[in-house]
Image (cartoon, rainbow, N blue to C red; front, side):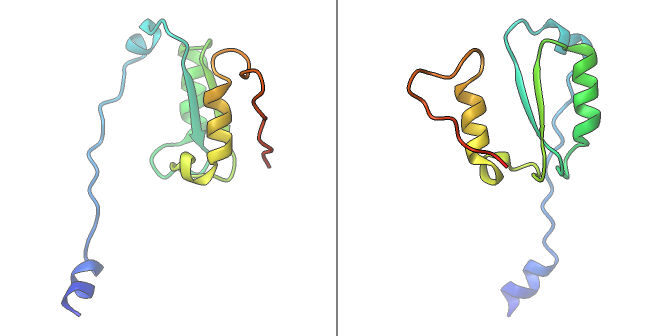
Length: 100
């Protein structure tokens, strides 16, 4: 009972990582892929995608519908597919997963 009562008041406090400046993002010279969960509680996917389209138009940015911030858990096939096909084409012999 004590454990249950203690758990009721528990609130996870995650540190907020520092945000990169637009200039820092522009300086990246490697291919970058960003997958954003449309329902993420940590950021507004539309705002992030719009910012990246403006400052890093060569980046591959995708908003994944019906997902939150835990994309590897919520859409593992999609995440695997995007990793295996970025940058460039799918590896020979690899099957493309079906996504809804």
